[in-house]
Amino acid sequence: MGLRARRRNLVIWSQSAASAGRGGGSRRPWAARAKPVRRRIRTAVLLTVIALKPLARAVQARWRPLLAGAALTATGVILRSSTVGHVVLLPGLLLLLSAPLLPGTSGADRERRSELARQLSVYSTPAQRRDLEAMLDQYPDPVTHELRDILARQAVATAAGPRIPGGGRTG
Image 1 (cartoon, rainbow, N blue to C red):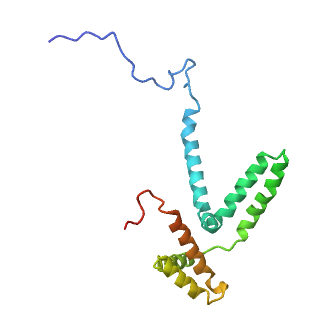
Image 2 (image 1 turned 135 degrees about the vertical axis):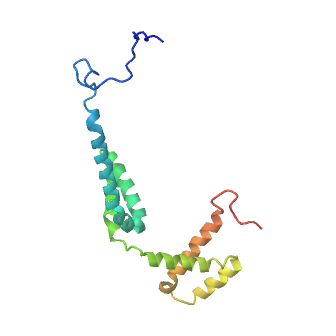
Image 3 (image 1 turned 180 degrees about the horizontal axis):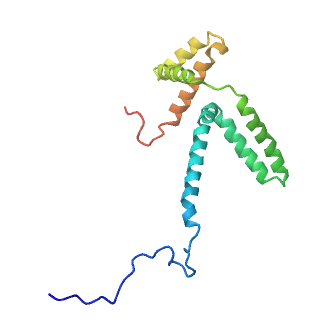
């Protein structure tokens, strides 16, 4: 066996950082700094989300006025040059400012209300509902307002039909 001839067609698969650009430096000087910046941004967003979790729990009961207030305020700011913008902006700001003053519900209240709704779902026929409403009429409204509210929501839900096509009751 003889010696192999030297290869004349060399291929460079990767260039070093010094020989990548014309001036001896890399073409993208910002590429080396991008990873730490992205990591800091991700960390900041994660810490912000963790810090806002208690606020999200507090807002849970008040999201409807907040949503309406944000929509009206944004519309008022966008249309601020017209009279419609001024008319819409004030109620939006009032809703935003009054939402924190609404009473919130605790986890125990939500569980109690869902248990009550389950128990009231037994009264499903119109005759049973009329009998229950006749019993509730014997008591003052401040005592039975929660029961009436749950019954009204259930009546609206049954009148609207199933939310998922084919997911309703059969029979």
